[in-house]
Length: 395
Image 1 (cartoon, rainbow, N blue to C red):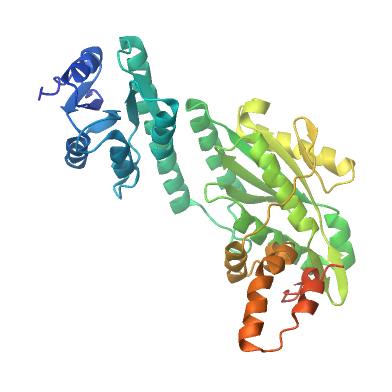
Image 2 (cartoon, helix red, strand yellow):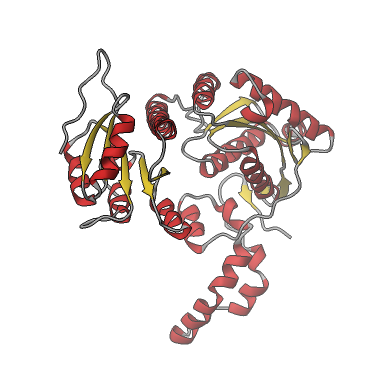
């Protein structure tokens, strides 16, 4: 096996592990890359796997699909299921020869980062390698940023959300990282409609309880990579990395619909709340800072409020309603375990329908006298609220 090329002056060159059972293919690839990269060679997937375990300096893998002992598919499975993060996340470029598109699609599903054809030219191969290494480096930086975010984020003990200052600081870090990796950051500003009227009619205690309830719902619904802060008494802001505006719009519509479906009971009176949500996106809005994105999203909240509230507005205007997907029984149980009853309530009719065959079986076996027919009729009116301000049955 040829020795790796020598280290260049100063910083070490990235190291490529080339795995192919053809000596000629390995020689062709290493001839293209030897000026810019160090390399190691292995003749089959199992030997390549052992090298990955023992050599932490490998930055990227180039592997054939068809090899003895362990083929490229098996190697991909081992790499992507590894418990060692540096192996699990390493870029893997597959060498594609006569394989059909079905074979390439299988490799994609197993986690292939890219493909090159046998006989590829120097320029294209170096470009693919550079792109794969750059993407992996940026992914590591994002992971480091997430870990730092988790360790350092100051949380408001009342609401369980981060501070405004941290939202701005972390948001600008995410925006800078997104620019470097040609990704995007989306921002959502959420306003409780007619909040002043709510406070005037029911008092500051009730308006504060509504705010806390919304904060709790947001904490359950957003991703762990997102950050949520209260930016005004009735306004929250969510900053989300690596999500496009279409996906964000669908999420905002589901959130708005979930809040609209909640009926709160306070001292015998039914209170309904709604949200107006403004969206902004770093690619669509071309903002220079996270503050610019927040201002853009807040401006769209004003547009939505002027039009009557209870709507989602992005750069192109009001979004049409998006249907809430059916909730699985497992998801409903998880939310109930977190006391997030209001998120389950709107899905109860569908959940009851899915459980009816099981409930009928239980009744036949144990004959406990369950009123299953009545449950069917009242499925949308089950009340599970608790506390000072409760979720009330919907009519």
